[in-house]
Length: 201
Image (cartoon, rainbow, N blue to C red; front, top):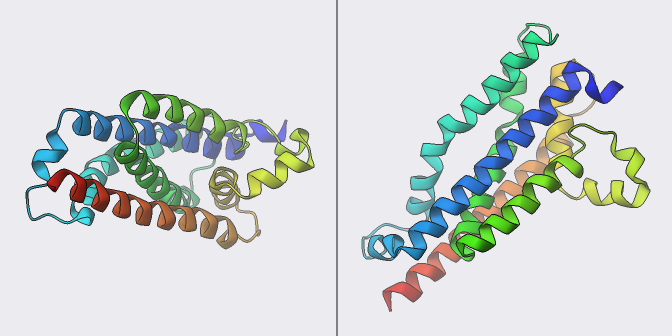
């Protein structure tokens, strides 16, 4: 099947791996919140964006390790070695940003049990609605239209286009992922600010 060709399955598995960053980050923030660690930090002069960067920067090496590991595995199963691998690595950046900011948003707005439940739904949805290892057309036209509104299929398709060297336009797919990243970054800042104000009262 075409979806199981190395240049198609590797991007799908990479996006699947990156979704675990969301749950990891969400659980970390939720635990910090429940232990009052965040509350103690809120008395510092740091701003919401500073707290977001505090959680954002340490997970970047993790995302890089996941992405590189998947691409190296792809080389072992038949993906050609070329400069396309570097471009493919870069094409995952919008989805990485979305995953991180969504995880921060979940952590600051939900309790640990809620993050665990929503995180599992998020991980399963990313594979089923992203077409990581199946053709989305078999799900029907209605489901396919729904997947077009979500970032998962766009992140996977953009990386597939780059890795396979197809001449299709990647900017629309990357643009959708960037839009989701921007929206959840703004939501994370807003809810961090609300949490800081409520805890400092």
